[in-house]
Length: 68
Image 1 (cartoon, one colour):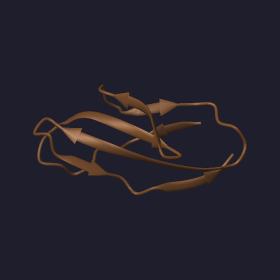
Image 2 (tube, helix red, strand yellow):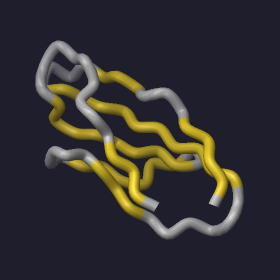
Image 3 (tube, rainbow, N blue to C red):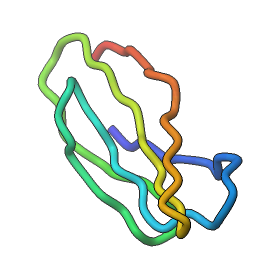
Image 4 (cartoon, helix red, strand yellow):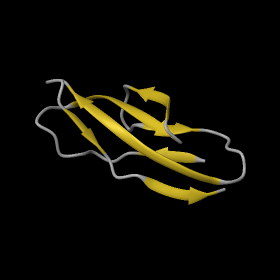
């Protein structure tokens, strides 16, 4: 599974994106385009991302639910 993030509207430039999977922080990416990949067990999963900009502003994506 690969997750990619498009630019969110923020006051500054994105410094990092933290990816959350099933309630756990699973990756922090500091290089655009922001993405992570993972092998997942079969079942239902939820993923979202939190972007932090250079002004320490944070914005969370909506949560996506999917089955593998």
